[in-house]
Image (cartoon, rainbow, N blue to C red):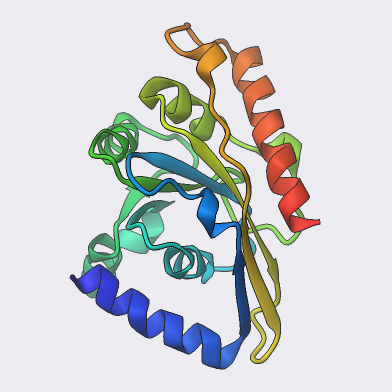
Amino acid sequence: MFYWFVCGILSIAARIVYRYEVSGAENIPKEGAFILCSNHIHSYDPAMLAIATTRQLRFMAKKELFNKGLRSKFFRAMGAFPVDREAAGMASYRDAMQTLSSGMGLVVFSQGTRMQKLNISGAKGGVALFGVKSKAPIIPAGITGSYRPFSKLTVRFGKVITLDDYYDQRLKSEMIESIMSGIMSEVEKLVD
């Protein structure tokens, strides 16, 4: 309930402050687990993705956001869970897999941090790993524009990517790199 209340307020605010547009929302599955793989240009990106879809999302977020009591409670209430960007551990892996096994949407910013320019080769392999292990479809997403007031801000969702060819295989590093290269190429199309 809290999640949808906050999303409602954020949606109104986004449409007042920005020329906010969403395209490709029909690509988000109506039910079942999915992974949103997006570029990351600003700290407001999770909010823009949350209000762009009618599905509840969970977010992998840097552990530093969970250092303070009230802020930590807010992020957790909004579906975020901590990840150590330097050494991703089993706790964040379990949280991600539990999110997907419960049929929810998981947002992963594969670059691992905010970057104004998309760096395909710098993408981390979590999306590939989660997609293969959970068999959840992957939706590429691109956020473009500016967060300056009254600027145009667009969220685009691409076509569903499935990793059927890799299910039940032992993933090797070159396979993960190949998967991520293909996914990030689709994200790149959405931000160009």
